[in-house]
Amino acid sequence: MILTIHELDIPFKQAFTHATVTRSTTESILVKAESLTGVVGVGEGCPREYVTGETIQTAMSFFHSYRETWQQFKNFGDLQSWATKNSQLIDANPASWCAVELALFDCWGQENRQSIESFLNLQELTGQFQYSAVLGTENIHSFKKQASQFSALEFVDFKVKVMGHLEHDRQKIEFLKHLPIKNLRIRLDANNLWHTAAEAITYLKSLEYPFFGIEEPLQVGDYDECGQITQQLGIPVIVDESFLREDQFEYLQADPQSWIINIRISKMGGLLRSLVIAAQAKAMGIPIIIGAQVGETSILTRAALTVANQFRDILLAQEGAFGTYLLEHDIFDTPLMFGKEGRLDTHSITGHPGLGLTLAQST
Image (cartoon, rainbow, N blue to C red; front, side, top):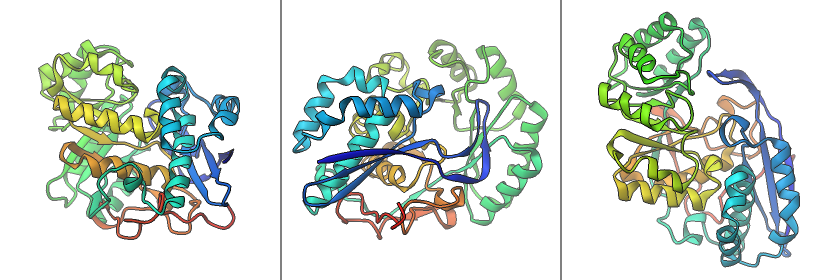
């Protein structure tokens, strides 16, 4: 097995902004795993310093430190054994490991003529998946334009990012409420905007809408104060940056109905870890959202489908599958993208070996 890595730097068609950062290109790594028979698997990771402490540089360094060891892996058992013994290393480098793991799974799946699901002994993909519209913190004119475009596509599920400008956020919510959308459902993403529960509660009350969740309202890891928001408003808190590893379930176990976990494959450290998190969430009665990093290619969209498919019964919403709606180009001949009503049909990849994706010749 030969493993290689390089940076993916694909421009966005429009800059994407939230309370923490503005992004105009992807910040991702692409790992390729080539077998002795010439089969090539691909994996992707999205290092985010404000989420996991990673950068492109640290992800590259981690990869080069352990590449020789990983190239000796012969099968799934070798990978699983190494990952178990080196869990703390993966804790510190989840995006880089995610890219390696996915590349190896894709390669082995292709070699064995098995889909990722079959290779991992999971349910085969089936049917459609419905995605959320994600609206950033652009000016109100841009917001209305994008919201109208999503409405024309018949989206019903919206994630709205807020920055603390109350009048602007009120205008956004009012605009959505008056669009011709049946069964409109909105959740907010505050990206750790407020410092106290009292601040968040006052602000959320002022928006006068029954949001089904509020993502990361307070500082990372402030579980106690977040619990107060749920107690007073009856709105579950969606943990994203505040939930990266299995051991963090201890902060949710006292009141599981107060939480929703946002599972992003890269953030969690790959597909296996994401499946473990989803299984534990199900056992505790905690619903999940399958999230996405801004700028993901079809690799991470495809990997996320594996988890969503396995845990449809606790899946509240799904993000991603933007493809070339956001990217100037994807790295695959046929990108995985949502269509009308935010739906993505999996018939084109179901049962195909590995990830079932075909790299563009220029990649």
